[in-house]
Each structure stands twice: as C-alpha cells, then as structure tokens.
Image (cartoon, rainbow, N blue to C red; front, side):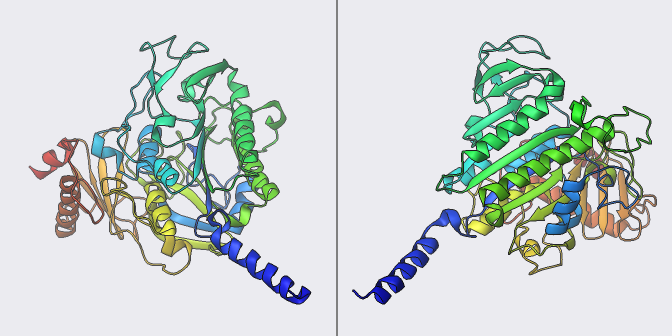
Length: 459
C-alpha cells in the first residue's frame, strides 16, 4: 500500500473508531448533577441583581449555559425532593412530605428503577457523593445514636442498592460528622471537615474516570447553605455578603464555599478534557431557609413559590446555547426522562412516571412548555398543581386557593372563588393524575397514598 493510501486509511480508521466509541460521543454524555441545599431562587446574583452573595463560579457557569427561570423542586423540603430527583416520581405518591433521620428506613425500594440504575443499564458508571437523606437500613437496627454512628457500622440497604457504583457521604445534616463509604461508616469528622472531604472524594472519583472507557454520572448533593453553617477557615470573612435576616454572619461565607466547590468540580472536568461532552446541571433542592425573596412568597417548607421555585442552570457545550435563558416550567424530576430522551432508550413502564424530557428546551428546539402540569408540595402536606399560568393549591385541610402566576407571581390574589371553572378544571387534572399513578403517558400505576387532601377538597 502506498504511503498516501496508508495515511488515508489511518484517518478513516480513526473516524470510524470515534463514531463507534460511545464514551466519546454526544449520544452518551457524561452527567454531573450538583445540588445545593436550601439555596433560594433569589440568592445567586444571576437570579437577583440585588443579591449580596458572592458566587463567581455559579455566575460564570450561568454565562456558559442555559438559565431556567421557572424551575421547581418536587417539594419544598429536602427528603421528598431527593426522592423525586432519583425516581422521576412525585414524592406525594408515597405520602412523603417530611424529612428522614439517621435511622429512617429507605423510602426507595430496591425494586424501583432510579435514574442512576437506569444509567447503569445504559453502560454508565455512577457515583453519589454527599448528603443522602433518603433512609438507610443498618445492620443491627440502630447502631449508635442519631448524631453519631460508630465506625465500622454497616448498611444493609443504601445507595449501592439503588444504582450507585460508588457512594461516600452522610445521612443528613444533623449527622454530618458520620462518614459512610459504600456500605460502612469509615470515620468521624468535625462538621467543618465534612464538605472539604466530600469535595476531595468527588474529585478523586472523577480522576478515576481519566482512563475509563465508559460515560459517568456524578450526583453531588452538597451541604451549603443548609445548617450547620461551618465554612472552612479560608472562606471566613471572604464573601462580603450581608445577611439581612440577622442570622449566622458566616452564612454568606458558607454559600461562597459551596460555590468554590462547584468551581473545583468544573475545573476537574476541564482538566480531564471531558467538559465538552458533559451535561452539568446546577440547582437546589428547595427554597431558602427562613429567607423570603420577593416577588416570591414565603420560603423553604411552603407550598408558595418561595418554597419550591429554585435556581437551575444547565451547561452542555455544543448543544445548549451559552448565555441563554428558558422561561418554560421544568421540574428536578425531569432528569430521568431527559436522559432517556438523550440516550433514545425508554425507561421501564413502571419508572419515571412524573418525569418529562427537557431536551427540546435544552437544545433550543422549543420554547413553549414541555409540561402540561407540575405538582408541588409543602412539608405540611399541602399539594398544588401548576398548569400554564395557573396554580391551584389544595391545603392539607382541603381548602382551595388559585393564583394566576403570570399576573400575580407573589400569590397575593386568591381567585378560587371567582375563577371557579379554572379551579375545578385543575382539580380534575390533579385528581385524575393521582388516581392514575402517573402524570405522563403510560400504563396506570398502583396508588400508594390515599390523598386525604383531595378527598377533603372534593367534599
């Protein structure tokens, strides 16, 4: 063979190999989900020009991706939102409105396919590093105390059973010092040491992907700005933020540390040369703790917008337009269906029942809503249905409220008694979706929760 022919053949072979290797194609992007804890909609400067918080990594990331203005957690508090993230299912379907503790049993059964398990089935390697808060089963029942589980204590059911090849983290914020790796407690640390350790564990895991030939999914649920407010020494006094609520003066520094953690993860993707083929989503699990940011009403735990509307930015170079904005309604539950759409591999019929693909929005192919409806829930047991500009709230008592968010984002003018036809229509949608066990097209699923709120409202 002539040299020129060999050269042409080599180029062709390289091209074929690049097409044939799914680990390096956009069809199977890596995925990183960074979940701040209690970061309110109005706290990142890109979402509120009046914000005093310093988040340079988040701001730069927003310039590189798509900023969503109408994104929502599945709930207004930690545990149920995380259930929705991993299952693509509304947590109200299992009656989960409150939060779990150290010895709470798992609320996701091993039989349910999570987004992590689904991605495993598609050839991904998966990791969760950080706050779990979805319940664990412990060998021996309840080893140690609520705030300290002895080193060597073993899990019999945890993240490894739900699709994560690797787990390192802690049960919840009140037990932040107990560090679990895979299925065992490996050490006890001071609260201030936790987040630097979690970051290093995540970076080390990413380093392990350097020579891997498969795509990866990293779920990184951090602690800031949730309590305990324990910024590392290098961040104390560095944020310059004013905490107008008059709470812990280190609160702004804690947010800055969370932002710096995000920056380190993004830098690692650049260092590994995988940033261009990685979909990164940065968001929060619910509204701010005790801090109301007008025009949104209320904050964490509330059924009103301040409880569940969250900052949400997605970056995927070459696919998501840098510096773009999307005003369509999306939910954190939608990660599952979005990945299924990207991979062109439908999830099981009994999974992701309340997950809707965001892909047309991410690609800029559609600006109109992809969701016909979205559920919200409070910690107290209130449920709401959002459909277009309308939001119907069913209080735990069964009382109804109706708001037009286009005209009244602050939810000040209850129109339930004047727009009765709209209220009735939305209630019928909510009741039907509760009965069907899903809000998306597919096989009807068993109803696991009786929805007493809806029964009371129907009287």
